[in-house]
Length: 48
Image (cartoon, rainbow, N blue to C red; front, side, top):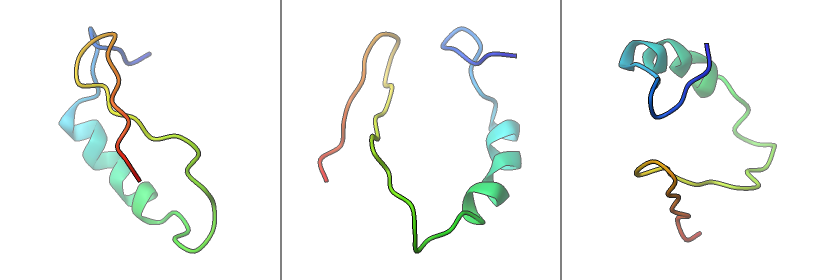
C-alpha cells in the first residue's frame, strides 16, 4: 500500500521500521537530500 498524506504511515509502522533504521551503518554512506513534508505540497530543507 502506498503512503501519502491521505494514507499516512502509522506510529506502529514507524516503530516496526526503527530497528532496521538503527541497524544501518553509521560510518559509511551518504545522505544526498533530506527534507520534511510539513503539509501537502510543501517541503522544508533543514540547513546543514
